[in-house]
Length: 271
Image 1: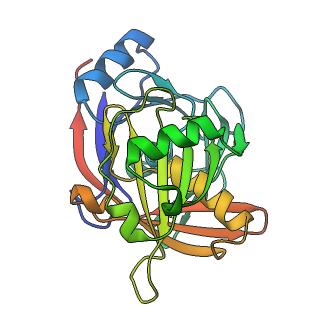
Image 2: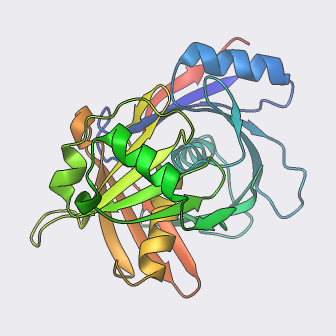
């Protein structure tokens, strides 16, 4: 089968978040997909399949090394890039429709950059104070460091903390979570920086370089509450030596989350 590896949220290979993509994967079993995802040892591995929904251009299944996800952001963009590079042509020029566990996700292409429309959240609103206290403790934060905390879960299970600034975000040395396992933090950069916000994402077994689903949830929260403008750029991966840049734009009722994508590996895989 055709195989691709795409670096996402970067314009330079090795500075974003990679995703492995297996094309034409209809003949694979769930067990084969899960085993290959464990073998790649990337945060996510995806499988392109024939859609079952007539409005979709393709179907996508997304696996971590330990579970299948209904939706994830950087795998969506990387898989869309791989599908296009392999000759895929959307029914509607400029708009791809991806069928996945979260339903139909729209992906648009604008001047070479791909963006997905943030899917509806399955959980939002305040976080229980006991959980907030645990998260603060694991991240080494004081109550004064935290401006607000919200559920921003669009499938993976994200809780997000708005911190006082980007420096506070970058200074975190995380411990181990007991109950809440997917935590994102965001803080504003000072005026004049090349990004408006700094973002980090923590989940077992560590820190994710650049995270589309988390940025989508954060964008819905911060734009909706008036904390962020309707268009902004978030930096992520700084502490990991990456240079992720997530471009967020609100267009009417949609929040689009996008970035550059680089096709780094193209070949075949024997499964």
